[in-house]
Length: 370
Image (cartoon, rainbow, N blue to C red; front, side, top):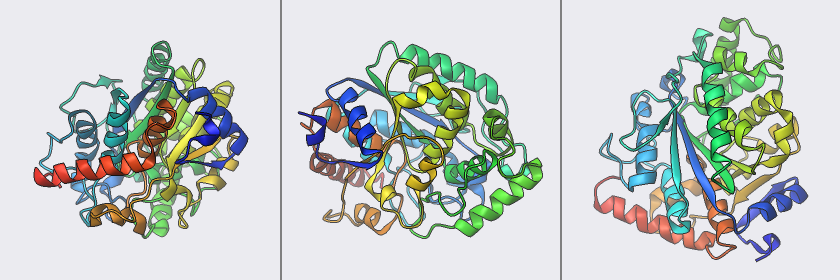
């Protein structure tokens, strides 16, 4: 099937480049990489909905990847949910990857709780609250190890889909984007229907002040920006992209956090940008409270692809909540759906993914994991 006919994938930005990228990956075999980490920034009340309480956000990354690989969580009794009980987007990722038989590799960039599944450790540590002005240690070491990993993976996969799980990640993304000179105020997304922009800006301004950094001051030193006001996933994710995209296409799977990664990657190695696309969900590209396109336009001419997934007719309220602005994206959900459709040349559709999500949701309900 020609990429133009791959229904269920929206070409949201840089359409022609998006078509070219889809042509490169259609029918090919990807590896899905999920980079996990934690930041104490997520414990600030009201910042993240990636856990029932701020304290439980520490378990979310480990639980997400356990769900992806095992189909259930081991480090906690239930799947990660928002304070309102809406389940993690890992349930979408799991469903898409299993339908298309896409392998998963977990990379620990600095998660406080380690998952009970195999993972690659890059020697990173959990991030501190960015308001300390000294958020991440070992940034360069983690980046260089991740780059080597990306280079190795580029020899065994046709392309990579790289996703992440780090609660609080849009707030750290905002801080790094501002430090690197991207006007991101009011543009990053949120896992909550009401996007707490005022709180995020207040936290980020405190962080930048503590670090002694003004807007754009670290434009050509992204690793320094990460160490001061970023999170541990950033150097790991960027390193994998820089290492792999020299040889193979890389679909960066996520929401507005990917804009921070894109800016970091561009500053470190602009030559790989032509081999990158962002893969997200319809909920992100249609989100009135954020602006992924406006962010990308400030950084590089990369395409944004979006999985046109729709839960409005779901029989489960926890899934219909996505249509009301809850969660939106995470754990590479959009990119996983896009790659499932592309790998099977449209043999798997978004409707197939929705049915599989509902089946897995029901199974988790029966087990008492939701």
